[in-house]
Structure formats: C-alpha cells, structure tokens
Amino acid sequence: SGSQVADGPSTPLLHASPAAPSLSPSRSEPSSLASRPRLPSKRETAAYFMAKTAAQRQLLQKREKELASLHQELVATERMLDQMTRTVGARTQRVDVGTIHSNLGQVQAVGAEMAAAIRKRQERWKNMLTDKLQKSQKKLDADVAHNKRMRDEINQRRATRLAHLEALRKGSQHVDDTASTVSSMIVAAQRA
Image (tube, rainbow, N blue to C red; front, side, top):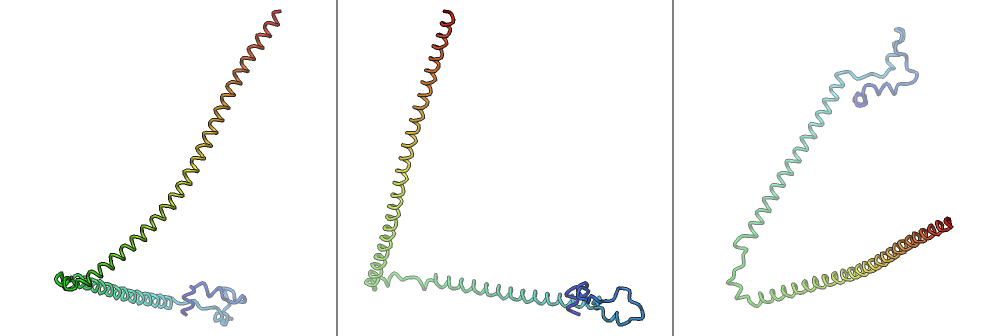
C-alpha cells in the first residue's frame, strides 16, 4: 500500500491492463471487481503521511543535534585560542633584559644574522623594483616614440589639408575671375 500512496491515487489506474472491465460492471461478474487495482483508503494515506512526518521530524532533530555539537566545538576552540593568546602574552614569556648582557655574544650573532637576512631581502626587493622600473621605462619609451610618430603624421595630414583648402580657395578665386572676364567679354561682343 506504501507504493500506491507514494505514486498517488491515480497512478495505479495507469498500469491497469487494456482489457480492464468497464466502469459499470454487471452484478453477475464479481471477478472483474477483484482484477481492478485497489486505491488506498484514507486511513492508509494518513498513516503514510504520518510516517513521512515522523521521519522528517527525526531528521530535523538529528540536524539540530549536529548543529549544537558544532557550536560546542566552536566555543571550545575559541576558548582554547583565547587561552593560548593569554599564555603567549604572559609576563613569563617576556624577555628579561638582565639576561641579555650575560648572553651578549649570542644576541649579537642573532642580530647579525637577522641584519644579513634583512639586507638580502632588501637587495632582492631593490633588484625586483629596478627590473620592473626598467621594463616600465622601455614600455614608456616605446609609447612616447609611437605618440611622436602619430603626432608627426597628424601634423603632416593637417598641413596637407591646409594646402588642399588653400588650393581650393585659389581655384575658386581663379574660376570666379575667369567667369567675370568671360561674362564681360560676352557683353562686349554683344554690344559690338
């Protein structure tokens, strides 16, 4: 009955054989009623949904327990980190200045090693920055050269355009002068 409820009440009718009896069987054929798939009762459906609800409730309780345990672990970890921080910063962990003079050779050796390490790191950093600066300078020089070429080309095209406009102005002036000369010659020829 569980699979019938899960599929829904209409699904078993889909799997009925094609030779299933009609919806109005005669009273003389009681076997036709037995061959039809049985729909789940209301009690079976309610039991199915109650079981599903109980399973979901159990899953929810399990998740809540997991969440509570994770929260407890988080609190314990935070407490442990707080304790470690207090331990590291305690007075007992501080350096006693009075003992430095007795171990002056060790302190100077450690200081020299640290100074050498810092110098090496600064040298590497300086070399890296110098290399980066040289690459940037080369790129900048290439960009400046490209800009100069573009500027020269723009100036050349501007000069060509100005020369073209000047030629157009002179040409139109010459055409106007020639047109006025021709019209005056035509008028003089008509008078003669």
